[in-house]
Length: 160
Image (cartoon, rainbow, N blue to C red; front, side, top):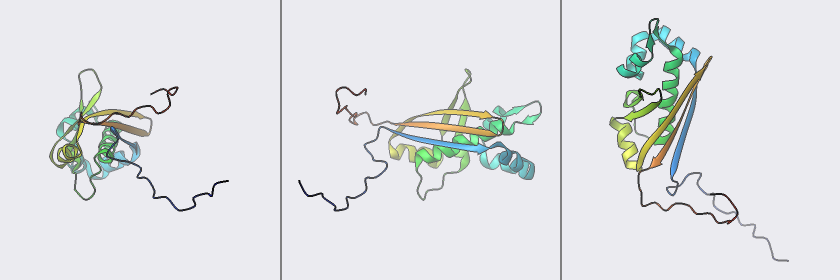
């Protein structure tokens, strides 16, 4: 019987530059956004959201906290995709934009756009939702670099 190799192997990183995508996800308590609106009002809105986001979240009764919470979750999910390390990314440099069909897209400016470009990220796909007191967002980022080698199946019977 062969001897077992008990030497400790170095840990493999959980993400590599060989990956084709990055994913970010976040969930927000709508009550926390409601409390921030109550406590700070326009100061909170102007610090975190763009004018277009506030307008999109407004109805006849003012701003809808659940819609704002979904957009805040989107901003957090984008931050997770960008992996800013020690670079400040102001909230307003990440904007959710509602398309006429109802879905939302992400528009980046400033440091957020710079980080995406430096990482080689192309399209950012965003999905947001809110239900009762929770709002959530998921972002899928694809690398823009088309020269990246796509992974291949190593097991012929496994689906790719």
